[in-house]
Length: 166
Image (cartoon, rainbow, N blue to C red; front, side, top):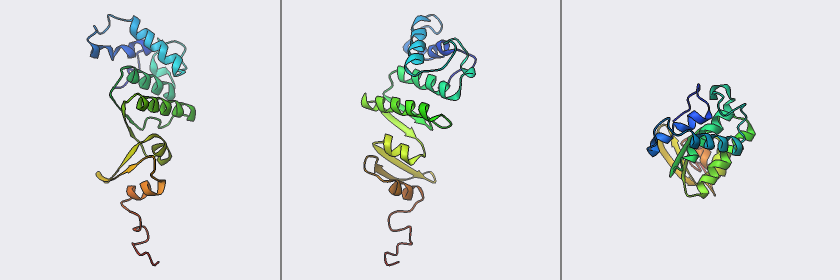
């Protein structure tokens, strides 16, 4: 679920309250408290938590979204290209949050292409190529070369045509 650009952080936090059976716009105290917590802990740069999120930078919008989703205490968290286009500091904040969720026992599914990030974040890496499962490797022991070969349908020894005598 995304954010509504014309709404501030508080109202965007309320979008999740319907799942807990709360009347949609009746309780403003809890979402306001959550908005302030996300702003402080994730260092969201905004003039006010009431400022429409469309007026925030891409990195700050991403922090608001990730903070709201994590606050809902998911058992599974899927992030697809979570840091694309973000500055390095915001990227590391997002990576830290995802790792914290893993430590809490949340199943984190991260979709991405940056091999350095995948090897640093993932316990297991599933490689898809042309819409098909091409391999599963242990993210703690896999190498960039191993994952790269799987990404191109090549396996060890196939890169040179399978000829070990070449």
